[in-house]
Amino acid sequence: MPDEHDRPIAAPPGPAARPQRIEPTAPPAKPKRKRRRWLATVVAALVLIVALAAGLTWFIARPEPGPSTEDQIRTAIDDFGTALGSGDLAALQSVTCGPLGDYYRTVPPDEFAQVHRATVEQGSIPVVASVDAIQVTDDTSAIAQITAYRPADPANRSVRTFNLLNTPAGWQVCEPPL
Image (tube, rainbow, N blue to C red; front, top):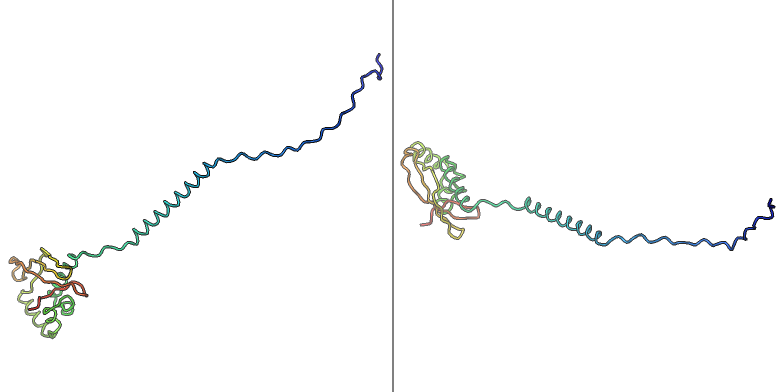
């Protein structure tokens, strides 16, 4: 039997290896393309939002177009016809100019009321049936062709003209000076 001493003796351990420090590796660099693409998308979205906001602001805040010159003239003629038919002296004074306006501004209200009452009874106050044509000159004067009738004889229609001037108060029916 072999003796305990017969066993081979292990070699003494060699110098111990020192632990090595392994530095961590840098994370892989993110591709710049994705970052640029993301940035471009954000910028494009912001530009789109700003453009939409500007367009919406313009659409909401834009001035409404006012009535056309012809519409203003038609309104002046309608206002004149309404004031004449109702005997509204103050309205006639505000919608007329020239010698016609001078007449309405200087006629005594009592006298005007008497004349108006008599013409209503006779059915001779002209009623504007339609404004048929408007010719504007330099945005300062106009001639309007109308069709009118008298309540006493509505079947008998006649063509008349109104002269109008564009005054600081707007378009007014004016009898041209003599």
